[in-house]
Image (tube, rainbow, N blue to C red; front, side, top):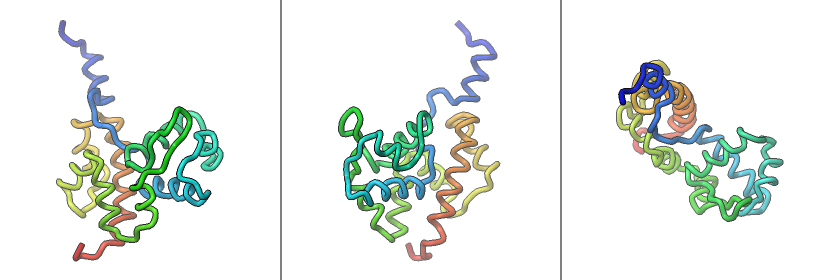
Length: 161
């Protein structure tokens, strides 16, 4: 049964079968992990994390999912988050190469970096590159997040790294 035009447009728009990626910038994710660790904890109840960062509902879910996608936390029970060794390490490092490596551990970030290297492409160029891979809506989101994260990482790197 052939797909109707509306279904084809929805697939293009939403990027059905697309790659997942964190929906918050890397440095923001690191800040959230730092907040958990500053409480003197490696494990935090979801409700305590919600209060700590003052985010609720869908936005909280996006943040938690993003922290997991960066590898900074795992669920250690139905309502607990546990900071991983990577999460602990990333908050302590000043090594921008290590920070970049964590960022590039997300497959779609690596694809972008492999194409553009240390050049941060214009948002429209990046959207065009991503659209066929993840859909228009996610391409717009990811383009902004990628650019923001790279703008934070690259100035701290030396040309030798």
